[in-house]
Image (cartoon, rainbow, N blue to C red; front, side, top):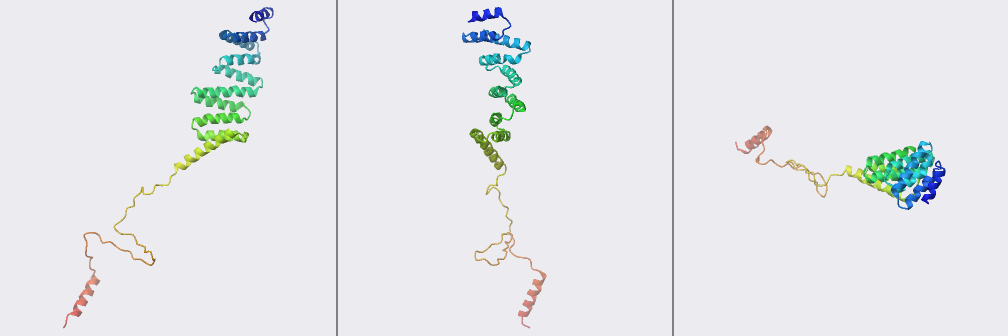
Length: 239
């Protein structure tokens, strides 16, 4: 098969699809490096000739062999958008965003999600996967917003509904924990030396009882009290 491909190339070097076929043969026979070199050369040739969109199949073949090559995926996303193959472009863009998240590059991941949202048509999947990334980062309010948008676009998505309910429950617990009633017994009242009024069980008016300060057993006698005392004493003495 390889010899047949080389024979075709000798007769018509401009026939580029045969180079893709040759790369597939290298791949099937286990010559991965040769296959990658052939695909890369084919992509560059299409690009130089202004036919970059025709290199989409070669990009897919390279990505199958090197799934971690995120730069290739990014280039493929742009080509798919140019070819108006939007669903495939979204698929590849989400793979990029989720891969960055798995690699621990969370800021880059969130940036990729936002980039997809900027050009892709409304999609519950994009909002749902973006919400999952935010949920893992414990950015509850942002995650809730994305899940809510996803549910609005697809009300019958059970997983997204469950995730929305989860974020609402977490936010509800957080808001309720911000204001807590004081614990009983934590504050002690400072009582004065005067006791509070006592209310009897049977009702009625109760006078206020005053407790004498310690160390003072007698009260001061006023002037009126003295006059009353002297008059009563003088009345008792016989003339």
